[in-house]
Structures are given as structure tokens and as C-alpha cells.
Figure 1 (tube, one colour):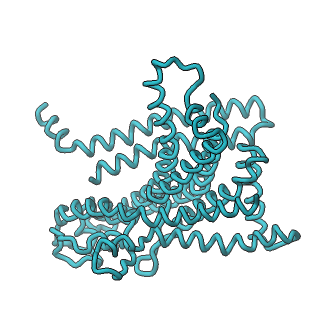
Figure 2 (cartoon, chains in turn blue, purple):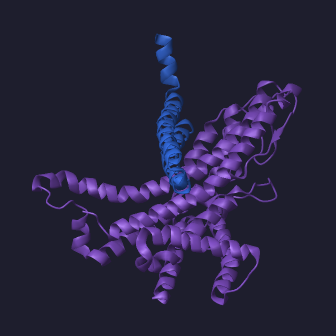
Figure 3 (tube, rainbow over the protein chains, first blue to last red):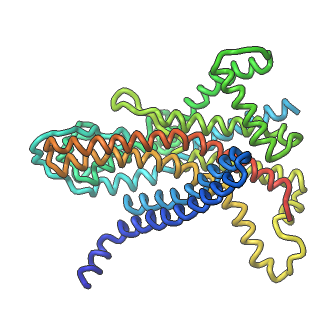
Length: 81
Length: 358
């Protein structure tokens, strides 16, 4: 237990950076999954609106992805300080 | 009215140049901290057995090392070092340092080094000029062809259609045709400026031949562009609704007085967060794409080091290279998408500031 705590204390920034990137990936994955779910449903119900839905879905996915990248960059800054 | 729009566009251009020239100077702290941490890095094992692959010392690495008291400086910087002589940290640091802005030319015009440093030309500035030069080269024929009408070369046709698409689908669809007419030149400039900087950054650098940099991969450039968005939001919002009307319009009507304590800071933060998110989104996307490619390439060197230069270390190089190419293909889509997202959101924010919902 003490050894574990010691390792944690020594590798604090590294572990934090890994957690930041990983948890952000979880969140962004859920978000993009929901966008994809809704877009797929929408296209299946209304194939004639596919182009409109696709464009909006890509835009929204880019917005969600941006948030995940914030975390990735912050993680990099933490690990390379 | 058209002359006014042209004037606004050129003022925006000047503001971009001015801000983006001034801002990177404050980035020197960023580089200094890099120097210190690099200086503290313990030297890798010197007794390299074999040189499997030599990793060229990165330009940015060398530049930021200048004048620093390098603790591990037993070998001259800028020399090729054996991969086996570098620690894993060194390998990734050398690869990632391509994404850190650095000084190209520092003019010696004044005895005060501070003045010289303020006038220093970073690669960030240079690649903004490259983007502007490309825009002039491409869009002067496009403008002429639009004025003249008729058929033109394929490149001109592509950009003509692109401009019209951007005007109709982004600016007019958000702001409406009446208002969009005034702002279309600015948003076209914004889109193509960001797009060209992103795209130029995708070209690979060749060590010792040329080095390419993504100007949008720094918060300074994207921050300057987002500040212009904030400025237009404030200026045109206040012009349209009146100074008092604009600030009052940020709050929902019929708000109890007690809630003002909470709502005023929240709305103010909401106003500032918009350009801040624009800054980080573009910068992080551009930086992260390059870093992921660098990390995939870095795996080659890591495996070489792990296997001590054994021939088997060539095997993981293929999937690593494949991954780098895959990310590159994704990235070449992202550069266009992020330029679009930046322009689209700027457009929406400006429209929101002018037509407040509540």
C-alpha cells in the first residue's frame, strides 16, 4: 500500500495526464456515439434529408471532438511540464 | 456600402497581422520553461552499440536550446544523435518540439535586447504571410473572373464555387441576405485565411531543406482571430442595439433584482467563453493532429531503442507508419472542417450579438 502511494506521488502528473486524456475520450465517445445514433436514426427515417443531417452531424461531432482535444492538450502540458 | 465592407475586411487583415505579430513575443516564457525542463533532462546512455536510425535534432529544439546552459550538453546541438543514445523522453521531445513556435530571425536594430526580441520574426508570422501570399495569388484571378464572368481555369472555378457556397450556405443562411452582404467579405477572408494556414501546415518539413509550421497550431494566432470575433460581436451588437440595449439584452427580461448578482457574472463569462472556446478548439485540433502523427512516428524510434537496434525493430515501423498516414488523411479532412467550424461559429456568435433572443 505504501509502495503504491509512493508510486502515485512520484508519477502524479503522468497519471493525471493519462486520466485527463482517457476520461475525456470516454465523454467524447459517448457524445459522438449519441450524435451518430441520432443521425443514423434520422437518415433511416428520412433518407431524403440525409445530406442535411450528415453535414450537421459532422459539425456537431467536430464540436464534441474539440472538447476531447482540450483535455488531450492539457494532458500533454501536464506530462511535459 | 461595398467600399465599407472592403475597408472592414482590410482593417481586419491589419488587425490580424498586428495582433499575431505582437502576441508570440509573450510566448517566450513558454519557451524558457521548455529550456529549463530540457536542461534538467538526464543524458541518455552514451555507449551506443549500433545506430539503427538517426533522429535529426529538431529545428525548434535547437532554436530553444540556444544560449541555455544545457546540463546534458556533452554533445553539440544540431548534430545527429543515435536513437540508442536518446531516452524515450528525448525522442518524443525532439519530435514534439516541431510544434513549438520559435524565432527565425531576430533583427539587431537596437542595443536593447528586449526591443530586438519584440521585433523578432517567428515561424508563426512567416507562415501567416505565406497563407496571405497564397490567398493573393489565388483570389485575385478569382475576383477578376467573377467581375468578368464567363469561363476560367479549373482552379479559379473551384474557388469561385467555394466562395459562393460559403456566402450562401454559411453567411447568408445564418445572417440572412440583407445583413450577410455586409459581413460576407470578412467571413470569406476568415475562412480562407484559417484554411490556408491549416493546409500549408500539413506539408511535411524536410530537415535542413525547409521547415513548415502550422500557424494555427498556436493559441496566439487563433486567439487573435477569436479576439476579432469578440470585437465584432461587441461593436456591431452595440451599434445595432445601442450601448445600453446590448448590455441589457444579455440578461433575460423580467429578472428579479436579487438574481442579478448571479446572472451578471454568468452572462459576462458566457460572452468571453465563446471566443475562448473558438481559440482552444482550432489550436487544440491543429496541435493534436500534429502531435498524434509525431507520436506514431515516435513509436518507430521507441521500438528501435527497446530492441537495441535489432533488425526486428523494422517490423513495428510499418504499422506505425500506416497509423501516421491514416491520421494524416483524417487530419487533411479536419483542417477544412475546423476552418468551417471557426467561421460558422463566428458567424453565429455575431448574429446572436446583433439579434439577442431575450
